[in-house]
Image (cartoon, rainbow, N blue to C red; front, side, top):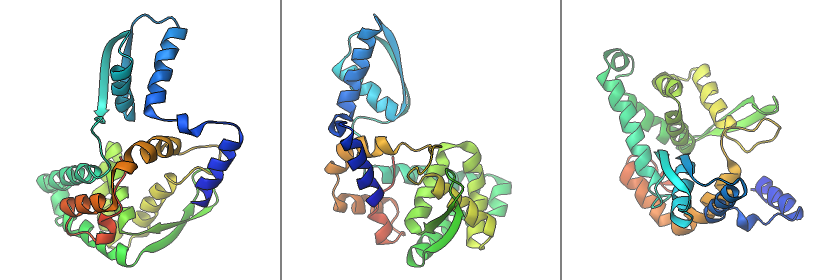
Length: 246
């Protein structure tokens, strides 16, 4: 929180209007860019949040749009509590795919039960470990609790190689294997707020400027907890109330 507040102060001191960083303003910027470049008609492509922005552009500034291509669609009806059902669907796909594949099922016969047990165990007794900061190379302390494990597994859905390795990581963590602990901790560290010139993949400016402004105000803690319980009734209440990323 302190780092976030310091970042806000530093940016505000430059004269930047941080309130202007939102989907409506960004769509207007795209429309203005098209005019400046003299583009009469263009094809718009958007993936993930970009698909949300493309829909905003199509709604507010349809002039000149020849076509829209949306990939990994984030609908304009998106809500933060809805992420729990998305996570449930992703987890089910992994667990069911492993159960249906003979080699995976033989190696990991109780994958879902194991992961649920880990979420409960680590939420009750978090594990603190140290890994190298991917940006600076310095030691970085990482706390793995139940919520961190849920977020870690959800993030594995973004890349096939990571998802394929997830069953080994889950059972490895259950067995206390150092390589699994390190891999999961490093994944968490790579998503920490940037502290050096090599920024991680996550867009924290996007999260602060859009998600916190446009999504969270419409979700109450009770909404998050109810959605978490509906999706994962066997997870601790403290995890259910956290919510998961988009």
